[in-house]
Length: 626
Image (cartoon, rainbow, N blue to C red; front, side, top):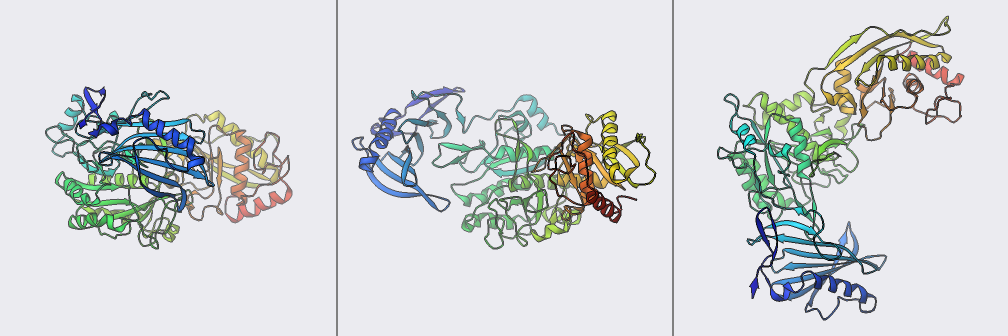
C-alpha cells in the first residue's frame, strides 16, 4: 500500500513525502534514530548494524576521502520502496560517528540521523517533497525531532514584483539589455539584487532553467554527500558578474549534474534566447562528461564560453580538467592570480590550456543569505572575465566570440610577462579598468625641520590620497615625522606633491591588480606614498612597502609605500616603509631601538651607520635620492 505523508504547509503549498511503503514509513523519524543509536551502542561487541528493525543487510562498501579510507557504508533493504544506509566513520580504526540515512526506492534522500561516538544525537535532517516528488526544503530537527529554525530552501516559488517586471519589459530605446548566462548551482532568486536583474521574456517568465531537476526554478542548491547538506555557490558568482557588468540581464542555469548530456540542450536554450556569452565556473576530471558540451559549443561558434581552470593546485596541461582542457576557438579558460601574479594557492594553471591569470582572491561577493562576503578561486575569475566580455560586447553588439577574444588579446596579451610562465595569453590586472581616473592637485606641503641640515641626500615624494579619512593635517604630521627620522641618515626633504584621488571607488584599496590602474594613471616621478582606505592583499598589513626587489612580477608597484588609516604610529610606520623602498631591502633586524624591527614601536626610530649607508647607496642607484 502506498500513501503520502503530509509534513507541513509553506507558502500555501502542501508538502508531502515521496510515495513509500507502510514499512518504510515506520522509520520516520524516531525509528531511524533508534536504529542508528542501537547500532552505535552495540558496535563494539557486534561490529554490525543493529538487528530487529525490519531491515535486511544488502551490501557493505568502503568510504574513501582523498584516497584514504575513512569508514564503511552498510546498505540495508526495508522493502522494494525504501532502503537504509548506515555509515560508520572512524579514525585510527575507532568509530567516531554513526550516520543513518533513509532513502526511497528511487534513491531520493528522506531522513538522516547522525550520532557521535558516545551515541548522542548530533545532527538530524529531513527533506520535504511535493506530491509530484519535487524536493522543496530541508528541515534541521531538534532533540525531540521537531523542526528547528528556518528550513534550507531547495525550490521556492519564483515571483517577480510588478515594478521590477515593468523595468524589464520597457527597454530604453531600441536596444534590449544584453543577456549573459551563468551555468552554476543556480541563484538565490529571492534576493532583490538578483531578482531584479533576471532576464524575462515578453510574458514575464524567467529566461533560464534548472537542467539538474528539469524545471524552471534554477535555485542555488548543490547537494553534497548523500543530499542532506547543501553548498551555495551560484549566487556568489552571479553577484560578481552583475556588479561588474551593470548593464546586463542574467540568464541563470543550474548545471545538469545527473546527466551531463543535457549540456547540449542548455546551450541550444541559451542561443534561442539571444545569449552570446556564457560563464561556466565548473568542471570535473571526467572527459566523458563533456562530450555533449564540446559538440554543442563547436556547433555555436558565435557564442563565447568562459570556463574555470579549477582549484586543484595542478598543471592541467599534464593532468587535465574538463572542459578547460578541451581546446575550443570560442572558449576562454581563466584562473585566479595571487598578489605576486602567479596562480593563487590551490588554483590550476597551464601554459597551453589556460588563457589568463585574473585577480580573484578575497574579492567581495554576495552570498546566498544576501550578506557581503569575501571569496577566492578560479570560479570568481570566471565571473570577472564574463563581466569584462559582456562590457566589450555592449560597446559593439555585433561582436561574436572570436571578436571578443581578439579584443582581450589586444588589451591584455603579454601583459604581465611573468604570467606567461603559467598561462598562454597574459595577466588581466584589473578587469574593471577603463573609467577615467582623476586626481586633484593640492599645493605643496610645508615640511620644516627644527634643525637645518647643511647637506643631504634629497628625497622627493609624490603623495596620493585615496581615502578622505586621511586629512591634510594628518598627512603633514605623518610626512614630517618620517623625514625627521630619516634625517639621521642625512636623507632630507625634497619636493612633496599631493594629489587627491577621484575615480571608481574600488581603486581606493590596495590590491596588486587594481594598483596597476591607479599608479599608471598617476604616472608619478618619484617615490610614491599612497594613503589608502584598506588593503585587499592576501597577507594584510596596515603599512606595506614595494621596492624594486619584491616587484619583479609586478613592476608597476615598484618604489611605492601604502598606508592604511588604522596604522599604528603613522610617522614611524612611513619612515620604516620608506627605508625598505630606498634601501631596496626587505630585511628586519633585532634591537629594541631600531626602526627596522618586524613591528614598529613608538620609541624605536634609530638606524645604524650601516643601514644608512645601504639606504644612501641604493637610493642613489635607483634614482630615489639626489
